Length: 286
Image 1 (spheres, helix red, strand yellow):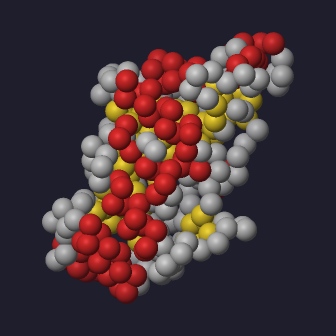
Image 2 (cartoon, rainbow, N blue to C red):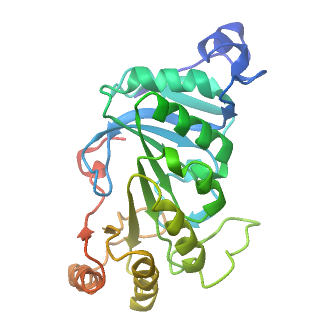
């Protein structure tokens, strides 16, 4: 993997990043703080294995013990864009990015009209204006938008949900997740109240599913509380139980027996439950 460096602040860097508007005068769609843009196979959830353009936004207000992208926790001064789909060759530019230029680059990277465009992070809904602008633009282009969110910012989702093809909503469990520095816990019971509010809005998208990461610290009580809230919205919302990929502060998966018990437990409450691990680490792609 290599990184083609753009000289910071140079005329060539400005030209490469979409003209002076990328920094000084954002275009009609506005601007955003990114980490990277690349093409890979979706490694999680019910769309696993499908070619996807990942648009990774900077900044996150949670700290998950198993986070596999801690470099996204804080906004970055630079971002990188893959030069050719799947090449793992990148160009580097200065933030912020002009969204009109970004949308055109993503169009060039996406191999087919049905390729998913994943707005991910970090937490993308911390930049709600940018997400709403991009989602509307991609919908107008006939593109499919896949929003990956930790599922806490309901008001931000409200502004863009009608342009989203699929909402991938993480359900966070207190046993392994805490707010970031200086961030208060959401009002209500752990994350559950905020998640239920978010999920009710997410059902207005073309499709939605919930994903929960299971670790050796996961408890039956917090899983039952999650199932209560999902069932209260709709028992037909798909749920993906994802065994943790050991990383960060987690060094092991739950025991296989526990996973099968949790699967059966969830299937008694909801109509569409699947046990799916992360797949992209298996074959070594981004």
